[in-house]
Length: 145
Image (tube, rainbow, N blue to C red; front, side, top):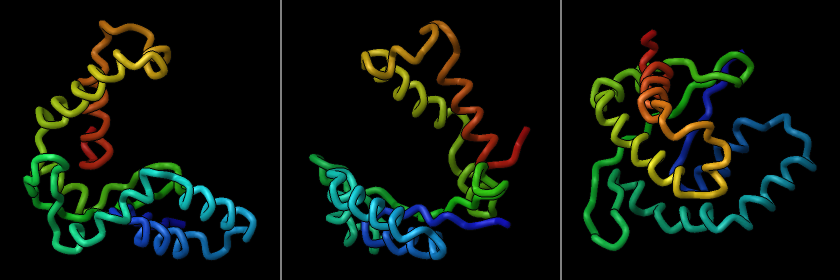
């Protein structure tokens, strides 16, 4: 059975999606999830962005610059264990180049190498981590091989 996981930009949307997905979830697990969500500063902070997401723009903190925003839900398959390519994710990969993804993942790994908690999980800094990660993201979202 395939389920569509709704990835949202606000706590309210997250809670709604979570309720839709977990209709048959054990009430104790649901209570623990709600407790976690209400105690997470990042999720609580997302609630303040709700107005911006409704207007389809994201405002960069500190600069006030706004960027277009397009919501694309992730489609899960394989008992919820893997992403299934959707029309939305494939169209996103037509707009975002592999080079763009490599810039993003390179920035991530530059920061990860400096973070002692993350760095301990990275075998060697010389491996092409950013390139492989960018290709993996592209493959998962576009369906390419």
